[in-house]
Length: 389
Ligand SMILES: Cc1ncc(COP(=O)(O)O)c(C=O)c1O
Image 1 (cartoon, rainbow, N blue to C red):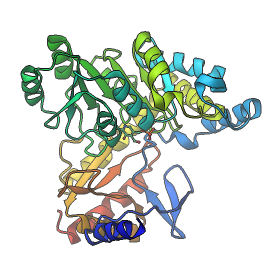
Image 2 (image 1 turned 135 degrees about the vertical axis):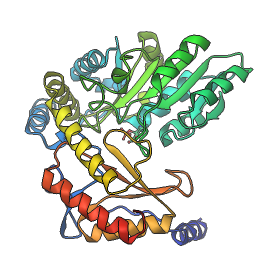
Image 3 (image 1 turned 90 degrees about the vertical axis):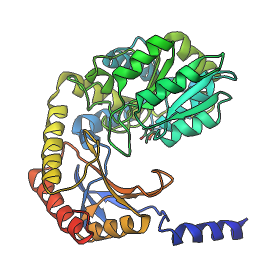
């Protein structure tokens, strides 16, 4: 076995696609220590910079005092502590849904949702750029899979119309795509749902806390809060905590409690994380300035990068893809930026399609003007050297 693995790894290395983990230590909300040197973190998903907010840290500490460190069993056995109920009520009402069910993380929630709610005879229509967890979940499903072109509603409708399946139909999409930063056409998808009686499964992992006047997510910005059949999002990005939740009618959630293996057979989240998520919700529900400050930074970064000639594709919001193309060129650019104190990752296949390797830059609320100016100037300098602008 080891020989085969080494050979495969060698091939991955030759393609410039080898991954290794980099050890870092946070210094501030936006700065990290990497390789004994201070770097600006340009790839955090903590969009609201809440993961170091004293209110959240204090909530976690207090919960540790009361509940101890771990739950040490699954939710169905003895891990469903009272904070779960409180958090499920809070997140459902924040997002405009009646009920919620918390999972240990977004990957497991997605695996649970699609593999459990779909069956033989059903058809799943999936955006070609959906997140790995959604794809993985579909592979576990017995339903037929149909891939439609990225954000292309005409292609989606054509495929729905020509589907001969007799079972239920499901559209699966991210709301804001995690690697491209562009937004799914939710208004059109909602129309198709109504016309063809299709269930929509929406992943709002990167939209929650960021989009909409109240910041509840991408659905809200389309005036569609609470209207999808199954809505999944996470506490581990803008909300600065950890864990995930599924929003749907009670019968769907009860079915997941009874059938989703990734809910049933895993240790429940510790109380400190549930308390952290509750604290985050309390903050953002009462104060839209967190979200507004983030959007001011997004506007500043986007304007400066665009003016410098970077092609930001169709992205909108805090995720900015800088597509370089070849894997090895992308890694080279990443290394140059690291050398200048900017920490961000080269995103390569299979995370993104072949030939579209990129640097995925994220904007967070905690950036200062000086930090953003430094980031933009450095990106311009390196982008010119690489012939990107
Ligand atoms: C779109 C999307 N869905 C789901 C997940 C998985 O969420 P989690 O990190 O909580 O497992 C991620 C990334 O983490 C994501 O980007």
